[in-house]
Figure: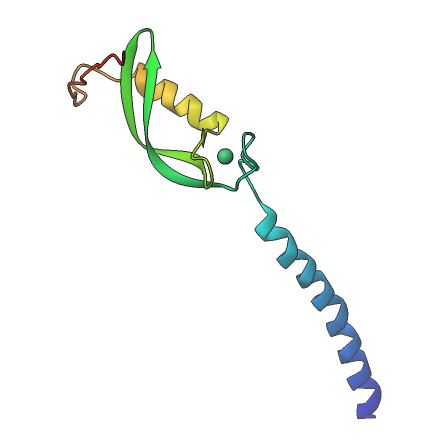
Length: 107
Ligand SMILES: [Zn+2]
């Protein structure tokens, strides 16, 4: 009597294990930025300070989620983050903290 029950239990476990293996392989391959288009390096997201220029005005945006190439340092932005930066600049007022920026020409 206990023999057929044991066999069925073992059969039930096998397909579950196979399914879990497939999920485990898929997850590390998620790359929201893809590889760097310039050098093929891995692109990792980290908060960055970004120089943002619009209509001749320079803004410095902090804590911007940015994809940074681990090899060449090239920066990449998700479309939704670009929209957020545009919105942040458009709603910025004269009360935003301001710094003086030296401009130096190289001869
Ligand atoms: Zn690169």
